[in-house]
Image (cartoon, rainbow, N blue to C red; front, top):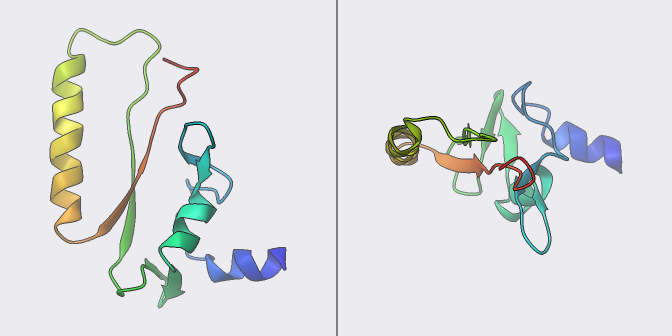
Length: 100
């Protein structure tokens, strides 16, 4: 069964793993769980959601100690996410709260 799941998402970007945590909380949510909830599939080498909209990943910058321009970085990230969402389904990968 594991081989079938991997084959289902064989077009996953190289820097993304199925077991990677997307959001942290009482129960961490993985990339695989998120893709399954979106009924994602691979077609012609592209990862698509149930509406055939391409899925992109966006990784939030993580800091132990925030840099002096932290607010600017966060604003640029939010702008980039909004821009991506115009054309893609976007999965935002949050920071591990243990890093912050």
